[in-house]
Amino acid sequence: MTANREKHDPAAEWRAVDEYFTAELLDEDTALAATRTSSARTTAPHIEVAPNQGGLLSLLAQMTGATRVLEFGTLAGYSTLWFARAVGECGRVVSLELEEQNAAVARENLDRARLGDRVDVLVGPAADSAQRLIEDGMEPFDLVFIDADKPNNPVYLAAALSLTRPGAVIVIDNVVRGGAVVDADSDDPRVQGVRQVVRDVSSHPDLDATAIQTVGEKGWDGLLIARRR
Ligand SMILES: C[S@@+](CC[C@H](N)C(=O)[O-])C[C@H]1O[C@@H](n2cnc3c(N)ncnc32)[C@H](O)[C@@H]1O
Image (cartoon, rainbow, N blue to C red):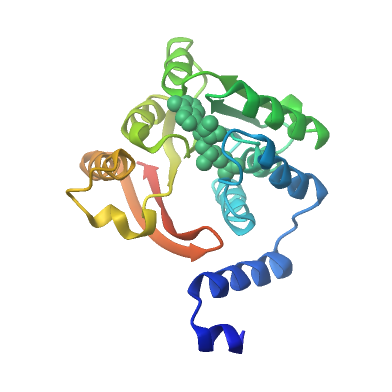
């Protein structure tokens, strides 16, 4: 660590701190570790949340007593697996994923962890899948995690609001994007997706929210947490 500080390699230091807390505090068993590794077989390897972020999502679900979780963006099912454990035996997780390849990897991981029976991975554009849930009168969710294609964040927030009850929590990942979020003129549609969803959250009469920037093995990013009144 001293050597790292002398060379001032922030990314290495952030990673080392993540690894320290993960080793000390988190119960990342073989099912979670194997799920993270299997992300290599998806269409977007290793863009899942870090272990300590998975732990945070799990704690948020448990602290809010969430038994029904909706997720936008499954990948290999790493965050899904944290949620599936957090909601308990009688809980339910619905995870929306564009790519059949990723959904197949995720289902394999969830089945291996014996959690497949409490998770539905729905394949297709998440906006369409969410619309179908709304039309089907899906029972409201307690917690929503938005972690799919960032330009569609505003669409996913609107769907989340139609699919949740008062008191529900909505978490939006990757809202800092290495600091790019403050660039109002950015031509990156992911940045504009974040900026629009921040405006939507802020102008919604029933949402209390904050955003926290983070550093770690995933670099400099952050998450927005909102709660419906
Ligand atoms: C950041 S990854 C999700 C990571 C996962 N939440 C985790 O932490 O383990 C984003 C996922 O969203 C999916 N995705 C991208 N565009 C999508 C869309 N329009 N509808 C549904 N899923 C989409 C990608 O295929 C990818 O699997």
